[in-house]
Amino acid sequence: MSCTCTYKHAINDLPPRQRNPAILRFFHAMPYAEIAEHLALSPENLRKCIQEARLILHERLNNYLSE
Image (tube, rainbow, N blue to C red; front, top):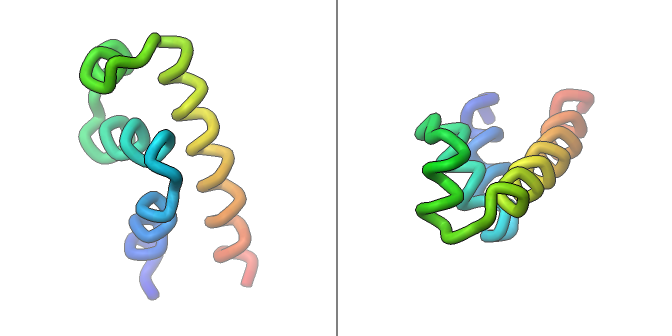
């Protein structure tokens, strides 16, 4: 499996609370303020969701890359 497919698969496996902000941020490069407004989240909650997504992705992709 290619790295791009693995990355997309890892994002798709995120819980919706982290997946939707991650897709908008990482794939669509939307600014935080725009994502927060679009998803009706406070800026603080959005940053927390994105940080959680990064931590989960880091762990999952790190495991994949170390195999």
